[in-house]
Image 1 (cartoon, rainbow, N blue to C red):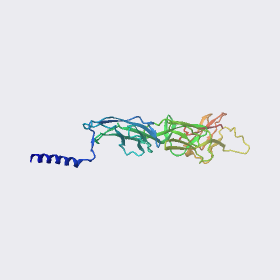
Image 2: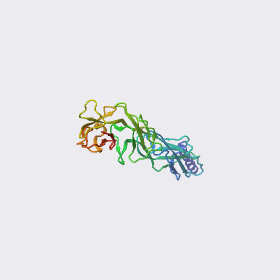
Image 3: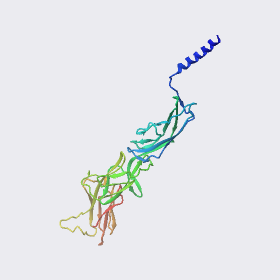
Image 4: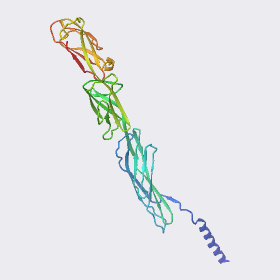
Length: 333
């Protein structure tokens, strides 16, 4: 009877072991192993909107302690993004290596935060599976675009709003304001172009407007581009001609000399035609030297009375607002 009992125990043990034979080994999470994940600096960062920045991801691992009487394989590697930012991905060419590439091709300007997690998986000689993971420090990606253009005036900058009117021969300095606010453009950005002949790069750019517009709709454009964003200023290049017309404008009279106390009607014309005082920013007739009287003078149309004694009078038609503020054209009655 004792022998039968012993045989029964042995048979029961054999049956118990047979029940679990062939079942897969369960993965053991972080069984003493560890992973340290890193991300190198993004290049470029900041990056132009719609263009691509890359960074090298890497990781190191401390192996776990396997089950007794078993050996451990080298780890296989995988990476995962901890982000839903559109346009960001990871490229891993070899799962035997912890090295991968973070690829960011984000199409909207902004500041984006994300991280990536590296996972190492080992297998022991008895089929045991061991897993450990590590996450990079936060990764910041600054994606930059052009928000708007400004022009230099009076020691500061003014937002471009609507069509600009520039006297022929005058240079204008433009500034491309970046977004997000306060961000720095990537090297070589923004790029300047346009029918004005602008060509170059940098935050600010000076354009010399030496060619008259052919009409009041012949725009000389200035465009700043950064990646897939841009802003454009449309410019009409004009000239201003002051006109002096004596009220006693008899046939054959001398139009370079006028009599004492003679009245002159003051007006102007523009090239190209069709440009109005309000477009320019305001006009004002002024006596620069030589005397005489000039009541009012605003609006570009006025009446001037010559001085009583012989004198060389100089009158100016000045721009009183807008981009050309303070510039003038001279008339010599």
